[in-house]
Image (cartoon, one colour):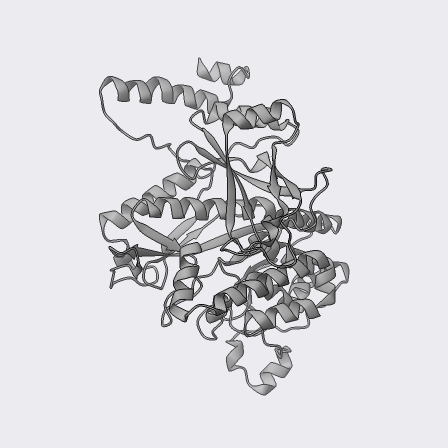
Length: 494
């Protein structure tokens, strides 16, 4: 009967599934007092239902609420210039009321939002005067990170409806459109490296007690608590339509890696933020803290957010297309680093010989010591990026630089480096053209960004100026702390 209803479009597939859940699972659960939690049977080949862009926001939200009827609140989220995830909670009843009188779901928010530090201090060049419209992109709507909530990413608009110049997510959207004008489309996948830390009785963060933890080690999966937590992470991600391709213990104590599937750039960035929030929420329920801090332990592996990118357009696998793209990325990499290593602590991870991408402007086939690792064809991994970056700004800078490389038909003059760039002889360095170092700290990276006039023009001078101002103010804030205080302060926020 339900199959007939679906075929005749009386019910959607998700509505039919929900009907089965209500009739069989919930009824039996209540009748026999089983008190069992509902865990969906997940098929990793089935994506989250795609909500058509031609539907109105009202139709999209209404359809979503039919599919996920327990949703009470919308998390209207954005990522500011310090990479602090911020949000406004809007009850769905209020959201539906707003859509009765407006085609888009939007709320007012101060223009200071894109000029705040982590402690809510406003930088001198930003102002508390004026208001943006914080507009939801309901194509990003997903359930999570907790029962009764749903994520939706937002973009900043002026009062007249135009896109705000400083909006990070809109900047990535614009970079994608410019790339499309050069017949470039992409798939991007992220590796989430994250460290789980326990809390002492006084609330201080401590290393997990697991002396057998090592890269891909079985020992790191011993214990019901850690396994229960990892299973709950997997299930919670799946409910939100994020299906992990792999996960495994990483090298540092308490460190795990979760491999996200490849998606178009905007959706990939959204999914990354959703996944991190789900992981952090689940871990907090076990009285632990999940941190993206780049180098939690000086003598152990750092924590990154490696980005895999391939050109998915028809000619993307041709060298004449992808080599100019990556030539553009390498040409501007010293400036791009200001976005991918966006915190002073990021540079603690920039160490040669640690599979962290090293400290040189270089690329190499299957070389984990180079900043760009070629995997196959147009599929490259960008290793010099961590979890403290504003992912929209970072991906926008990478795509913009690469697209300009294609437009200018740049040659990939750097040679394929097949050893650690730090160990090259003078002659090898000369032959490969590996002569430039990456900026040694955030101050040097910001200067490289400012000096790269072409990259600044591609991203937008207003964005670069605001970003540099926020980062300099952030450095001043952090410099006023003792080293141990600064580390804990950052770990509690990321």
